[in-house]
Length: 114
Image (cartoon, rainbow, N blue to C red; front, top):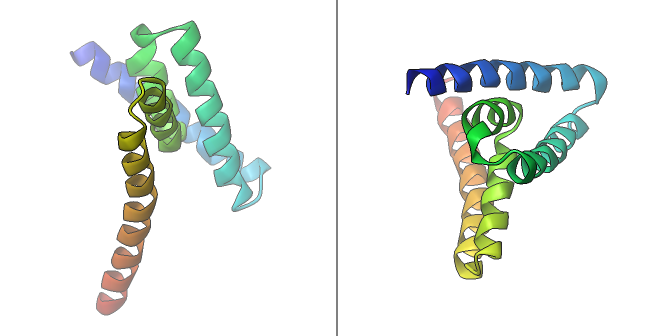
């Protein structure tokens, strides 16, 4: 358990650093798009070629630090592949609409206390 935690932490540091580095190469907001697309591609490759044994370091750590969108994309793929399209649609709509609503609420709440 502790080795998995350390693995996730080390991977997360690498992934977050890589994401930060992309912002110096690709302009905003294209950097976010590039990170999300690249991270989603890479998590698919890792899932197929390396499998679950790399989950803590590469998939949760590196890819999670690089982009949480990659995890979301893999979840969506797995739901559709498993024939759970209804749940995939709910997950898709909820994962886009709810975070957008949360950002809006957070901005509105913060502006009250400004």
